[in-house]
Length: 258
Image (cartoon, rainbow, N blue to C red):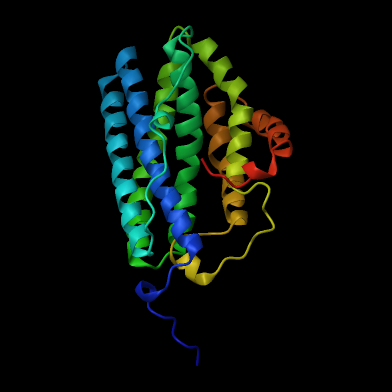
């Protein structure tokens, strides 16, 4: 007879669990600040009111995600506070460039890439998660990320329909290899051999670097290539070019998810 697993709620949390959930608290908080600042830019550009309202709603979602993640961090025995500087929570752009340029870069990096891959990533994290406090967060985040993803692609479509659209498409295509490179480094591109994880850590909503890397690669074929193609951007070429970014990364950068 197979021995019964201990109830998920009773599973002790490792330091890896606490570190990861604190990182999620910070990342979700940072996402709230980024989206709020982006939405201010959208107001300045007089975009569709529906997009403005969607941006404000997403900022609220991210605050809630951070709050829920903090509850999980405390449930795992965490005690540290956030260590983010105020200055790091603001978007920046060169004063001399049109605002549309900065909005395009942020939209592609944060939403067309980050929020798009977040959907399958959080689904994979949730599939192995059985600790109630952690599962509650992943359920909520996964539900919201689908809407966040679509916001990004809708906004990119709006931007590329502007009179500046051709120039913005060039900017997006130019930046995409570097964005892909940093994302691949953040999500396990140099750690594909790390396939194992403690079952208790998985129950708390973690997974090994190899699964992150595999999910990112699946997202390329399923989402990024076809979605960027409809906007006249060659994501496969950008992905291949991003190999130079990955190969030239210092060891300290590998695995630092942003």
